[in-house]
Amino acid sequence: MKTLLVIGYGKMAKAICEGLKGKFQIQVCGRDSKKIEDFCLPIQATPKYTPQEIEIDNQEVLLCIKPYALHSFQFLGEAKCLYSILNATPLETLQKTIKSQHYIRAMPNVCASVGKSITSLCGDKSYKNEAFEIFNAIGGCIWLEETLFPIATALSGCSPAFLALIAESMIDSGVTNGLTREQATKIVKTLFDGFGTLLQAQHPTLLKESVMSPGGSTAQGIASLEKNALRNALFEAILASKNFA
Image (cartoon, rainbow, N blue to C red; front, top):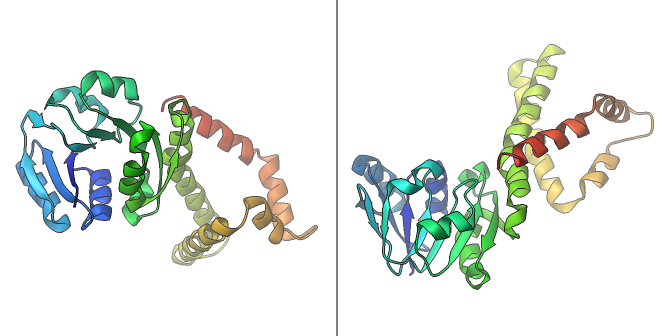
């Protein structure tokens, strides 16, 4: 069983480690010994207290710290492969900061916590299979050129918040029109769950057409959404997120 050194103990690190439990020998390091121990216990990982210096020589390393903390550690030795989930931190920055034989940049999303992330990957193609092995444990993966990472981050990393806003608005509209909040919430939650399954098998255009009868209630609703520029609002939201990714 291969060993993976995980640096950081946040929510995304936890989701990844839970997916890898039993598949890798996981070591977790950071500054707070109590947090590391609490993190490691349920995932059967080995805690490593490292106040400043981290030994990475000839190891596969998963970097899960915040981008601003990248320069707060001293990395000793040369890693076998560095996997980084740091947002807006290009491969060039990683290469200048941490010595490694290979580099992989990854961008999972919040759905990793339920094993349904879509993770964008780029970097050394010689380590593509190893990267897929790690990040398939929390969902699915897609290999991209690094120049496409900003739009991929906006589409996969930021969009859960956009969908949450849509879900919240739908619940509020149900309450406004007479449903209790409990009733409206149950309808919308079940709707999103079922729709996600359907979307795996059908193109969204076909899904829309399947419930859009000529002159019917769905057609009237779609016309209203187009009139109020929902499509353009989503275009602009994703573009705005892309520019900061």
